[in-house]
Image (cartoon, rainbow, N blue to C red):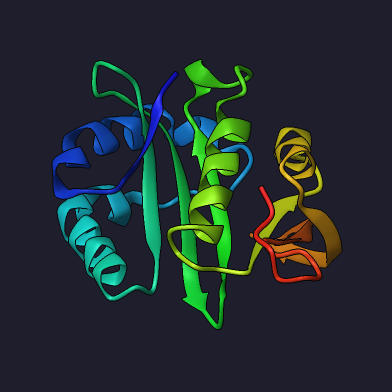
Length: 168
């Protein structure tokens, strides 16, 4: 099973391969990153790592035993005990439960290591796989949203129960 690892500078080559190989696949369900993202990948990664060092975002990669990046699971806009969850899985690894496992692990890290009490997420209405991952990992719909001009749903998940205990 791939490991969820905190994003580090040495992930850069494998991460760039992941993003390039899956660009068209991702663009079918989420807004494309654009050519500028790839042209300035190194600078963009440096900026992400700086945000992570500042505690604003927490970036993770799902890495197999050979060091290949199979997915990303990120917690962004960390503030006031919550963050926005985002994830993407390589086309060749889709349908194997990696997104569900990665999101579950990110939720555990959010509650335990990062001390967060809640997470938010969003997906387009036509992304049934993403809605399924969110449902399986304890997220509930909480409203409508537009993502890249497409209708979508917002979700939330509490990481504490009513007595303040961390949920799995």
